[in-house]
Length: 165
Image: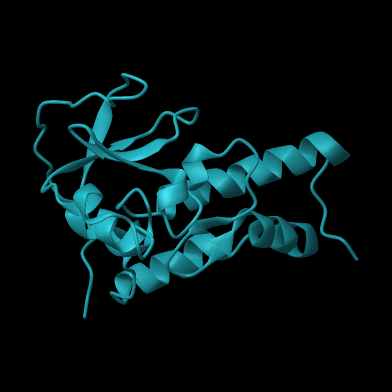
């Protein structure tokens, strides 16, 4: 089954719905994403809405909401990269590229192959970001930003980026 989660498409701008906990603007996210992210045993009432929004506020415990229905980080199967200040976990949920694995590769090779690998997999139709990524969107931008952040962090620590020998 091929996915179109990473294809470029036009999206309609709906009225922005504010997070009921922090009051910040949310982003629409599919029911498929919310259902795939929710832990088994999350009460049915939390999964009864048809339209959910994603709260992008790092400091807010709410991840998904629909009216007064809220799913918090603790209700989800996976850690949510953009909700954490210190994070070493997945930035690519389809192919399990983590901040830690990206850092290790950069330290050993001087670069990361993750963006190129993900791009190949997208072209082959093997990503499933709409159900594996908590944001419900393509992770390639997150991975590219993570690579850039790790490179900058390593340069700050060492003054230059050189593979370890």
